[in-house]
Amino acid sequence: MNRTSLLVLLLASAACGTVDTGEPPDPVVDHTPDGGPTGSPDPVPNVAPTVLAVDPPAGSVVDEDVALIITFSEPMDHTSVEAALSFPGSTPPGFEWNQDGNQVTASRRVAYPEGADPAQVEPRSFDILLAAGASDLDGEPLGEELVVDYTLHYRRITTAFPFSQTLSGNCFLPCSGTWSWVVAGENSSDTTVTNRGFLTVPFVLPADITVEAASIETAIEAMTGDPFGELGDLIVDDVTFSAITDQSLYGRGKALGSLYLAADHPGPGVTATFDVTAAFADDYAYRAERSYRTQFRIRFLHDSPEDPTYDSYHSDGKQDVVRLLRDATSLSVTYLIP
Image 1 (cartoon, rainbow, N blue to C red):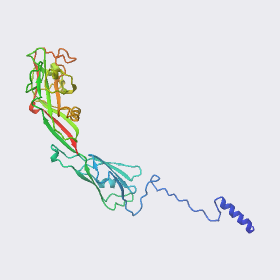
Image 2 (image 1 turned 180 degrees about the horizontal axis):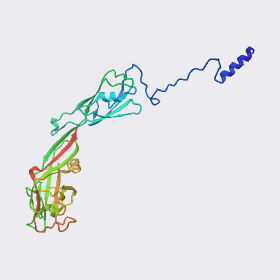
Image 3 (image 1 turned 45 degrees about the vertical axis):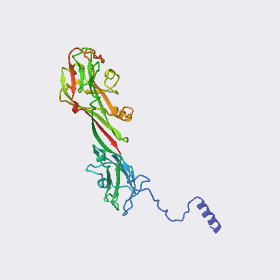
Image 4 (image 1 turned 30 degrees about the vertical axis):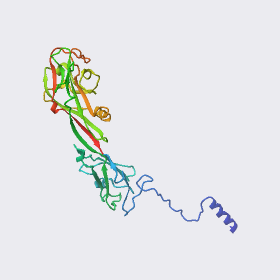
C-alpha cells in the first residue's frame, strides 16, 4: 500500500471515532461511589469529616420542642454520631437520618423554665454537644467537638387567682342580694325557684402572654338531699354579668360541661378540676371590655326532676342542694411569656 492510500485509511478511521493501533483498549472507569446512591459524598480515607451546617443556627431562640439538623461533609456512622450527641438532661433525643447518611435530625423537648412569678423565673439557655468521637464510615472522627447554644423562647408561669368576694355567691328568684356560699340546687323554702351559683375571678396579667391552660379547682363542702340523683350533673356556664340579678340568674350562657358527674355519686370532700382554657383565653383577649375578669355560673343539668329535658326553674318542694367550699375554689392559669 502506498503512502497516499495509508493516509486516506487513517483519516477515515479518525472520522469514525476509533483508530486501530493494534494495542488493547483502555479499561472503563466507574466514577460512581461504591456502596452509596449516585451523587452522595464519598468518604475520603484518612481525612476527618466536618460539619457543613446546623439548623437552627447557633445562638437562635427556639421553642421547647427542639429539632436540630446537622449536615456533614460525607456519610457518617450512625451509631457513633448518636452516641456523641447530647442534649441537656439524661433523656436521649430521637434520631432521623437522610437517605445519603450525611444529615441527621435530632429531636427532643427541652422544657421551658417554670414558676409562679415571672419576676423570679429567668430565661433559659442551653447547649447541645456533638463530641469529637462522631466518625464517618471509615472510622475517621471529627476533628473537633461541636457546641451549639440556644435560648428558649418562653417561660411557663402557673398562678392561682381567688374568686371575688363581691361577685361570687348564689341567688334564687327574686335576687334581692347575694349569699357568701356558692350553692346550686332546689330550695325548699320556695317551690317556684332554684338556686344557681356564680363565680367571678378578677385578674391582672402581662399583655404579651399566651394562655396555655386554665381550670376551676374546687371541692364540695356540704350537700342536702340528693341533688345529683334528682337534678343530674353539676354544669358550668360561661357568662358575663356586672351584678348577680334575676337577669344573670336566668340569662343566656354557654354550657362548658360537667363540673361533677351525677354518675360518679360525688359527696362532701370530693375535689374537682374543670378545664376552662378556651373561655378564659377569650376573656383575656377582651379583658378591657370585660373589666379584667372571667365569670362562670354553676347550675344543675335539670334544675327540677319534673322536667328533665330543659331548665324548668321549678322546685318539687324538697331541698336538694350542693355547696362548694369557697375557700378551696380558685382559678389556676398557666401561660407562656417571653
